[in-house]
Image (cartoon, rainbow over all chains, first blue to last red):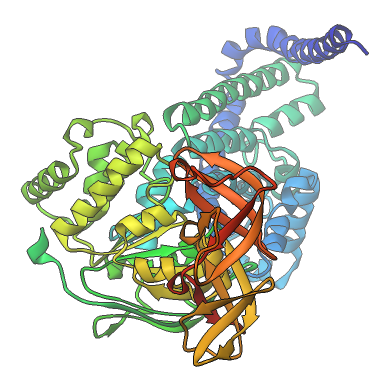
Length: 265
Length: 355
């Protein structure tokens, strides 16, 4: 195959894929955007948007608080079984979200562990905390992967030097590594938040789909589809797509800025 | 700065450390207060790991590190107060030069006016005042090196550890900064351990040199001693004594000899039995006529002119490498195939034990 033909075939396939994605997304946007203003006055959609925002922000914060120490451990400590641990932590990333939901449902709904937690007031099955837990479980591995790669990219000798200058290990991390991975954290957070907002399968299995109780935007979309309420369905879908597009734009911008600001990192 | 520095020696006792496939083996060493000590070794010899163990970044698997009367083996780097300058300087990329230099003082939470005073002192010592607002990636290699040294020196380190600080520089900057390091050492009196693979650098800077190879410290001594009296074939090869041979030491008429090809060369040594011996190429005198004592007849195999010196490969029963001054080869044909006589003074033959 000649160079020109090779290039033409590659560009053509890329263009077709782009066209396909644009066609699918813009169909929903074109039809859904006109319904957004009216739907925003509907209490159910307002509830769904509010619940989605609250649960996604809480689960994303939890993901960050857990992902930083886990990714630091995987990136920096030469522990036995580190590779196996890294692969185990990645399991939820490869599972279908519905299966993740089933795992959580069985763990918290049928085991002694779940019963003990429930007696302590921590109920996750068919509750709002269940939505947060499902989003956390599904999204944590992706954030760990992003942050682990970011920490590995920061030369460990910078932390070593910081320690010779009087920093404890935690202070060296806070003063040197953390500022250097700031943009990766931002990008990871946007990605995690966007995914949490759109999480459906795991949420459905663990928290159920109850109107005005566990009705996040994707659940609302599902319920409206089931009842044939196409206007609210289109509005929910359009809102989710808009959020995804904005998240992606922020993600891209943050990702590029890192290497612009800190050459040689 | 000199009066505030502590005067304590640094002692390593039988340090062993395994990292992956690499291992530091049984390293014992004492570096004296205010000394400029150079650790010399090829790439992969374990120089950086040794420095990192000294700095406390890796705990040794066995052995102890003492600073004066204190056993500091278990001390973390932040407690040791050893300055560290890496080969690529490891400046914090998100901080400007000023922030890099005062990073350690801010950790100590010193008052701003004291930080300013210390900054001004170290900045004038290193001549980096004009760089303070710049980010590290905008600096040249030489500038980065000065900033890294300033960042370490402002902490008044008990020991300054330099990991190949000159190897990333062009020859001109390297020579200038080499002199600068010597000046800084004289001014501050800091105990410096400087790691390098460059023998010239070690000769210029080191008051003593330790040669490390394959994770073992093979020899410690003055530059002169390392240069002229290497104690193993590996050290001899590394410091440029290209002619290395093995022979039984032969006692005749109260004098000791080694054999090279079919000739016997008189040597000055206390050793007996099987031994190795090395001869530096520049210590072989090449002439067209035989000379009295330790003279070998040989045939020129190849000649490689190198500016003022010419490298001559000679077959004298064994392969000999000699360096002759180009202008002094008049009257002595160095063309390949010609016959020459190589004289090696007994004092130029370094005899070492053969294990």
